Length: 196
Image (cartoon, rainbow, N blue to C red):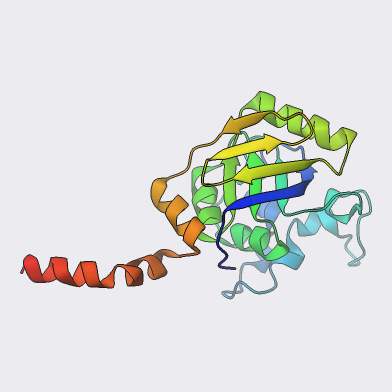
C-alpha cells in the first residue's frame, strides 16, 4: 500500500451520500482480522452485495460506467467509530484519493496513515464535481499534492486544500511513520548524544 504520491489524474466514483460511517464502509463483522489484506473486497459490503453474495447492480461500485482511483463522497465521510479497518478497505479497493467537504478527524488521519489522500473541498465545489460526473462519468479530476490543488477537468475550476506538512512529506516520499523515523535515525542519535 505504500506508494509515492505526486499528481493523480483519474475518473471518479461518485458516492453522494452524507454521513457515511465506518460501519457502512466496512461492517463490524470483518474487524476480527488484523492483516490489511482482503479488506478491499468488503468495502461497502452491505451496499455492494446481496445476502446470497450476488452483486447489487444499482450500487455505484458495481456500475461499469464508473471507475478510477478517486472516490467523491458526501459530507461527513468516515463518521462513527474510529476503526482503522475502514481506511484499509478504501486503500485495499484501490482508491488513492477521497474527496469530500468534511471528514471525521480520526478517519481522515487513518486514511493518511494508509496512503489515501483525504481532500477537503467546499460544499459548492463538491456539488459541482457530482454534477460533472453525473453528466459525464468519464470526467477526470486532477489532484496535485505538491501544490495542494484539486481541479475539475470538465469545468477547469480548482480549489486549494489543506494538509499537514509532515503527512504531505510522507505521502510524497512514500514513507510511513516508522520509515520517517528510520530516515532520521542519524539526526536522532546525534541529538541524543548532545543532550545526555
